[in-house]
Length: 320
Image 1: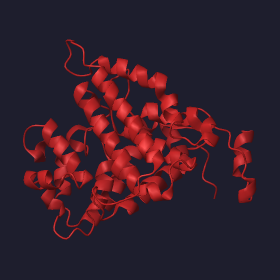
Image 2 (image 1 turned 45 degrees about the vertical axis):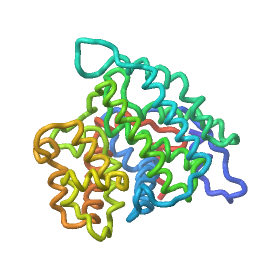
Image 3 (image 1 turned 30 degrees about the vertical axis):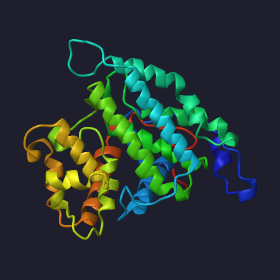
C-alpha cells in the first residue's frame, strides 16, 4: 500500500513521485465489488478518455486531415503484425463450426510477443511500464479458452490506448489518429479474427444487444455525424448510403460488417440499431449510446469481472 500513498500526495511537477508500475490484476470478484469499480480512479480515467475522444471526432470524417505521429505509425505496425499472424495461422479442420482452435495457436504467439511489441511504442524512459501495458493488449483480442470476443475485450484495447497516453507515448494532438487510424485498424484486425476463427460473441445479449462484438465505434461513429448537413440517423439502414459513405464514417463501417455477417431483415437481427434509426438527431443518438455503454457494458459484472487494475488504471477511489 505504500506505493499508493506515495502517489496520492500532491507534489510540485518537478518533484513528481516515482510511479511503481505493476502487472494489472482482477479486483472485481463479486457483484458488490462493482461499487469499488464505479468509484475508482480507473473508471474516471477510462470514461474521461472515451469522452475526450468522442469530443475530438465530432463532425469529422475518417478521411479528414490530421497529424500521424511516430508512435501512431508504430502502433499501426504492431496491429499489422497481428494481422500477418492471422494469415500465417489458417483455421484447422474441426467438427464444430464455431471457435476454430487455430485461434489458440495465434493467441500463444501474441502472449509470447506482447511485451516485445509494446516496447516498440513506449518511450525508453518508461520501459518499466511495458509489462503492465502489455496485459491490456493481450486482453483486447478475445479469450483463448472460450474462443470468444466481446465489449470487455474492446474495453481492454481502449484501456491499452489510455495507458499509452498516461505514459506520454500518445499525446493530445494524437486524438484523431487514435480513433481514425489506430482504433479503426484494431477493428479491422478484430473483424478478421472473428471471421477467420468464427469466434463466438462474448456475453452477447443477442437481438437485445447493440452489436455482437463492438460498442465504441458506434459511440465515436455517431459523434462523427453530429451536425451533418444531409445524413440523418434514419439513413444508416439504407444499404446504398452505407456503401457510398462507409469509408468516411466508422458507424457505417460497422453496419456494413453486420450486413455481411447476418442474413434476414435488419429490424429482426439488429433490433436495437433499428430502433436508433428512429432517433431524430445524431447528438441524441450519441448521448443515448454513451448512457447505454455505461449501463450495458461498464456497469455489468460479467464484463467488468475480467477488467484488470494496475498503477496506471487504479482500483483506488478517486481523490475527492
